[in-house]
Length: 119
Length: 109
Image 1 (spheres, rainbow over the protein chains, first blue to last red):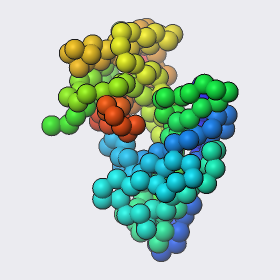
Image 2 (tube, rainbow over the protein chains, first blue to last red):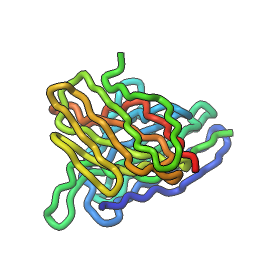
Image 3 (cartoon, one colour):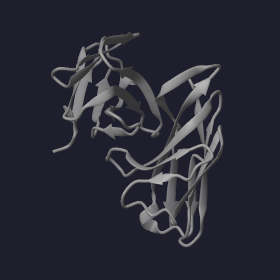
Image 4 (tube, each protein chain N blue to C red):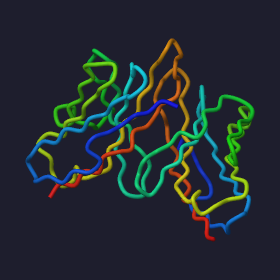
């Protein structure tokens, strides 16, 4: 199956700093990427959907100026948490959907996640 | 009421037991997904279904579109199956996933 990587897997930062999380599709072209966050023992919550070359579409209640998403290429999307605060501490997961060799992947492939801790 | 409901929320089993996790949904869907999340957090997609039944190794997933219900079965369960199993649906005319709250499975030796 298709592989999605995330970097870093874990990050600890001070309040007020910005943190960038990368999501890469390793063996397929990700035309659409999704960003989720997950609080402990809760389900995933969709934050935004990004299509390559377009602005991301944010879910209601998600601040687009705080969570900057860039999907500049078919294999890379980034999520930048700006001016991070302790309440931004969470598990962030990306997923990707796209195609390779003419085969279209209608399902989403998930990255391993990034655990962000803001002190 | 959640659009995707799973049961049970928690499940413990002895190694070798047959396990069933249920998922009901209340919206029109184009596909249903079963995902597995290990303690480290990474998520693996197990199945994507739009009808019938799929089997992969010891895992079997079924869906009944009329009843809006799906089941995930694990045969001959093993401690390495311990994880959170999440049901998610792709709602009609969107590409967004709606997630159930997950079923936490622990299989003891």
